[in-house]
Length: 309
Image (tube, rainbow, N blue to C red):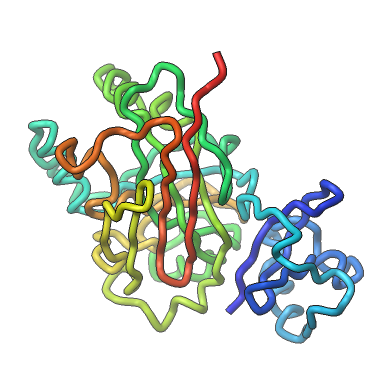
């Protein structure tokens, strides 16, 4: 399994590479003498050729360009992705969240996978603090999975879509529910309810690793969310109603997708406070620790802090 990461070294430089035996990280640019690029966006632009090169490389913890993970700081694996589209692909989440607001299910949801664009310049990584928007009183997490585009394409069919996927990671689509609710009444959005932060990480797992776990339109991957150590959300990615292949088909219709774009799955059933309801947990506050976990994809943890006034 190859787990790709982006990290900050002790000299302040930002580099990319992969985990070696969980406790070490290979700086792929330094360790290969410049054969591989220093960041994942450049790597993704030629990922098929680079992955072939990696298959013939072997490293040990004593080699140049290999560092103990304890001496590095993991960043978002794609700190500045080319774009971020988030879909709405789990029926349980959509249905329950709407019921909690006194709304019926939308028939059109069953006809097409829908998405919105969020702020690709506000991506956060593991351990990074999330600033609670000053006008937000209803802050929420959202437990999701994301796929990373690794091959350019336009009008991609669902049957061919897997060829364009590089890998997968955990995604937390932070939501200011009160801001979101107000703007959505106007008929546009979500925008300000979402654009302050999205967390991804801690690494990107290449698609081949998940192939044996394919079930239906998703993967047999347990998904969990905890707040301050308390388990709130628990679901499985296999329950998704639209596959990533179908999302890619929709996203690429009349549009070119490029390496380094992110596509989110939408929230798994029970995967946010809006869906669970206030009787289960209050909205998030300063000091809260939110931890998302997905089998194989790891654990993504962030702390909420207040915006300086």
